[in-house]
Length: 265
Image (cartoon, rainbow, N blue to C red; front, side, top):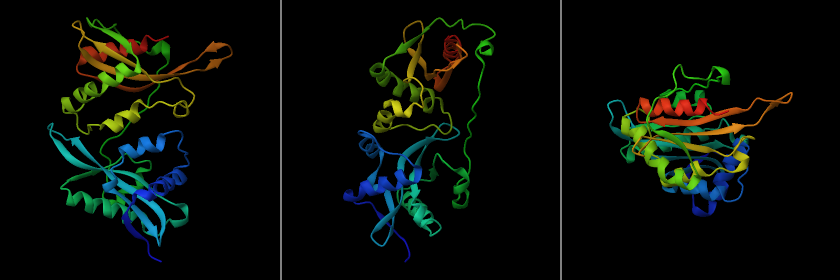
């Protein structure tokens, strides 16, 4: 029987999430399904069906992406793509992405983008790499600036409520506001997920710590987030500091934040 593509009725959303839980081997805990559902745009969510069985999921998020030159372009953010292992190689993925493209055309969105868990899958649908990431590790005794920051401001740590109040606007200012291509404005539900920090998401590291650089007038001009991973080597601490984000409005804030991170013992 050929698979069909259709919307996701409200009473079948648990099945839709279940396809992803099976495919990506995770289990929702506490209120996580509710949190993810708040991000999802259900009028832009699709499912693949084998008869009445829901066997695939996909959808789009309505995004605005900064392009070279500083303008913002409406973008269909492909998300939640998964197919049950029992229904691979039967056209489910093709059908879901085709529906996502048609939906984007109806809405007048000239771009489609995603953060791909397996990038090679998507080239045959017309996607190509727009950006790349690099991971690098610095040994603590090498991780120093040639000269310490002479910035007149200070870096201070934020508790979560204060970070929730300050960071979203600062993130927009230091990305979209500077015209950095590929920048995306997050919705409130997306920020709720950003600040949701359960222990089972930390891979054994500490809770996320937020630091903000403020100039001499007390105006926030950059921020960083990081975790610390405990490790001991024959009684000697070999802790690892994992930086999740660092955004700054200018070189002063940028240097001050790196100086702060490099100075953490």
